[in-house]
Amino acid sequence: MQKIYISDLAKYVGQEITIQGWLYNKRSSGKLRFLVLRDGSGYLQCVYFKGNVTPEVFDLCDKIGQESAIEVTGKVKAEPRAVGGYELDATHLNVLHETHDYPITPKDHGIEFLMDNRHLWLRSSRQVAIMKIRHRIVKAIRDFFDNKGFTLMDAPILTPAACEGTSTLFETEYFDLGKAYLTQSGQLYAEAGALALGKVYTFGPTFRAEKSKTRRHLTEFWMVEPEVAFADLNDDMDLAEEFLEYIVQSVLTDRAEELKTLERDTTKLQCVKRPFPRISYDEAVEILKKNGVEFEYGNDLGAADETIVSNQFDRPVMVHRYPSEVKAFYMKRDPENPKLALAVDVLAPEGYGEIIGGSQREDDFDLLLSRIKEHNLPQAAFEWYLDLRRFGSVPHAGFGLGLERTVTWICGLDHLRETIPFPRMIYRNTP
RNA sequence: UCCGCGAUAGCUCAAUGGUGGAGCAUUCGGCUGUUAACCGAAGGGUUGCAAGUUCGAGUCUUGCUCGCGGAGCCA
Image (cartoon, rainbow, N blue to C red; front, side):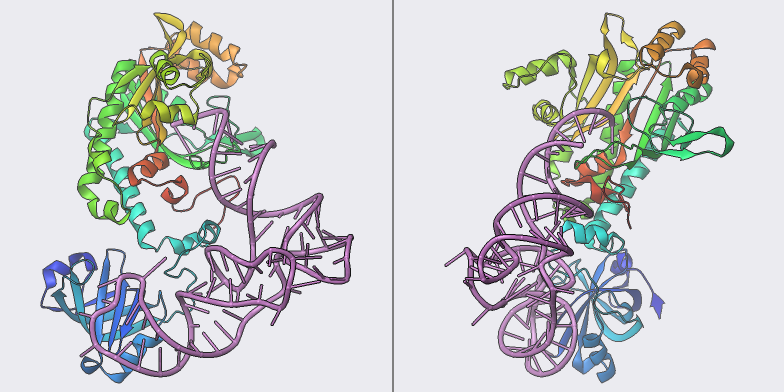
């Protein structure tokens, strides 16, 4: 008997096949048993009619519980009444592992219970859809940069010191060398890479020990950070908007089914086409004032402020040239106004907030050194980084995109904890 | 860290200071087209922990633990 996956059913209409999977749900009506099978590639309703199967098989249908591992055999038929459009006229049922009392039932559950059972929750159709979209986004990220001649050059996860000096770091002992820290950004290493290879990107997990407790923060999250030599802030924004358009359109094209499962309003995603609006920090402050917000010039935009600004547009908006005081030490000052940093934040629409933070980097040795001193950073730890300005320094720029925030936005979720298989948050590090 | 809310059956939730219930799940029975199927029955409880007020506490008070929502910080 030919063993196939549910995703390939269309090719086997009228043929007898076997599928291995798990019992997702079960319904019955008199002499009929409807077993809904999932195999990771899709869902299939298997119909067992009492007159077509042995009494043993029919009894088994009643006996096995949700998530039992099973092997079903029968004839594939097109069936408009069934979800997915196909159905299995089943004749055999082989139980590989009988299961009872599976915790996650078809009714509602609370978030604490679901998070405690994250390892099982991942089997639910909604979580499967999110993971497939996450994977498609990761693939789009890699394809985009690979196709543009970027080299993937990953940064270390164990680092000797803070990359930015502000965020709190996870600390660990490192043999006889004292403390090491889990990286909070691969950027500084990406800069070294850009001066070696021209165009690079890092893509990996990063860690922040901030005691953030919101729907937009994880202590461990994935970030992709491109870095380009001979690029300025405008080049950086050009790259960011092309990148985001590519990601969103890839998901729209290839994960329509999953977006439907999530009941995502895709008309909002279809708007994500170049060019994106570009406004300065000053213009953003004007928008806030027009909307009656009491905003003190010089502060960073809060979550509510970001929502007001992004609600003015139907696609991501790029806010550039922030006051340098609220931005990181390595960002280059605007030559036309040294109080401003050549930074850009990309705010996702629909209130999803910042998904990208980027900048043109300070490429002048003396200015960078003075910033390091202003921020009270240990100069010795940054000597290698200063070397990048000692030897062949050139204008360069890059940005970081938070993967989980991007998945949250594209999936239309209200919390990013569902976008990573096993979220790490301030009050949770299990399972 | 700060502000607010919560913890009752395996799960989701009810219960005026006065005999702790329902739906789902489970078990049993019924139905030849179910779509979170439906109908009937049964089993299932140290009301988060500790103390206090009261004739009497799931309910009121205090402390603790755990969690949720929001803020700040950020991607």
